[in-house]
Length: 152
Image 1 (cartoon, rainbow, N blue to C red):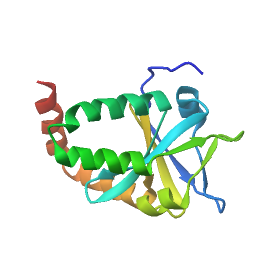
Image 2 (image 1 turned 180 degrees about the horizontal axis):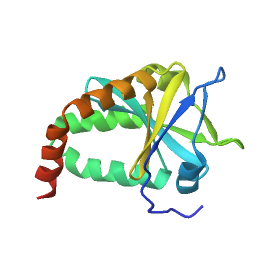
Image 3 (image 1 turned 90 degrees about the horizontal axis):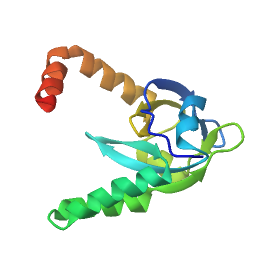
Image 4 (image 1 turned 60 degrees about the vertical axis):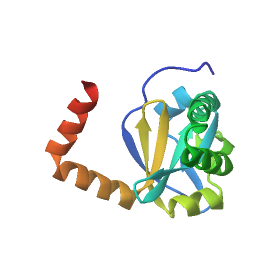
């Protein structure tokens, strides 16, 4: 499938089944293709999973590598990202099978939210996503300031 530059957005609640499979919504599959990279990503004081095409993963890692020489902490992060990232194929029903390591590192048990985030997806536990939204919407002024500060 050709790489598309469509921006992935929206969120979908999903359930991880007993075989550790989670459905990737069809509109996301159309952009990502049938073969993806799934890795653990640190966010605040917890981890989420990121899902992207192999091409996007390579671009992201190359960009990080360019900055790693001047930042020893970044080198450690690159090691973590590469070590925890798995190559997974989507099955005929559009599901990926999460490894026990991926599930454990991201705290995933059953209920998750699959979130479109630009050129990749994020998989959050339902509870963490609800907490994140609650905090974000409690401080709309802070969100507005961040948006305008970065766009200037």
